[in-house]
Length: 312
Image 1 (cartoon, rainbow, N blue to C red):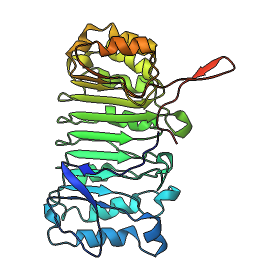
Image 2 (cartoon, one colour):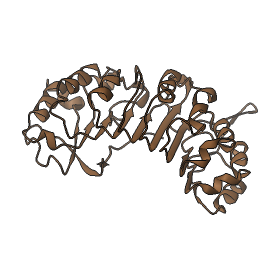
Image 3 (cartoon, helix red, strand yellow):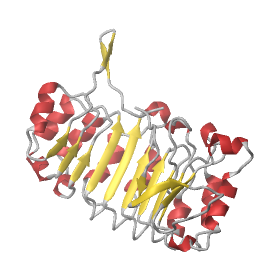
Image 4 (cartoon, helix red, strand yellow):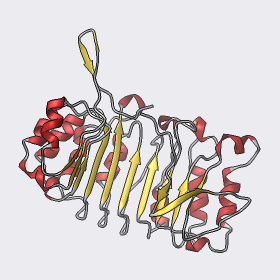
């Protein structure tokens, strides 16, 4: 699976691409996507110029949602440090910002495993009213020591998410967090997290308001499913999302045998390696279960291989 389209809605607003010639036409009613792209870069434009034009609008303080797309050299893996610095320098202008998507980049612009990120911890400190942070790409990504009073949604999409970042999340102080989504990916692209790294998320002790837990796009979905089935987190969350991963009947059976699963509102397993029989059993549960997009494992020389949906 590849990410082949940009978001069309973010922060409850429709997304439009920012045109520097027209400027901001609806500061509070639209989430603008700022993207340099290959063509603009070849014309000599820099992302800093695009962002400066955006930030210079007199109603910039009314902006509530911002989508950052391609920056200089993003298609070659260049990091986002200069973008971060420019946002930090302008934090006094973006007083209304509540939703930030950092890296709305499709596979045609850059493979997800090539996207170079940065240390985003200064952004969290400089935007204390931020409620949603969505990140795509995990190369050189760091969140630092997170202590944020208002963040409700944290999403990190990656072809491979490092154990160090997962550990930063589990060490974070986020009293208002309701939605947590981590794409764990494969170790071929930096995804070296293990079940031991995600287990603290399952205790129910870290984020008291958490309602949605997504441990997606994982190469060890069966281990996660077994751990969740035995974990206190099922007494707290309303949605468990193990989609895009390598879930097989082995992990699904542990979920099926867990009576507390019926406390959920939804179990999202789409893109999986379940048998038809297991899909039927899960679909018969009294909760909303998504078992769409069934996959077939690869078999070669007697070895069975399953792959997560998004890697390179």
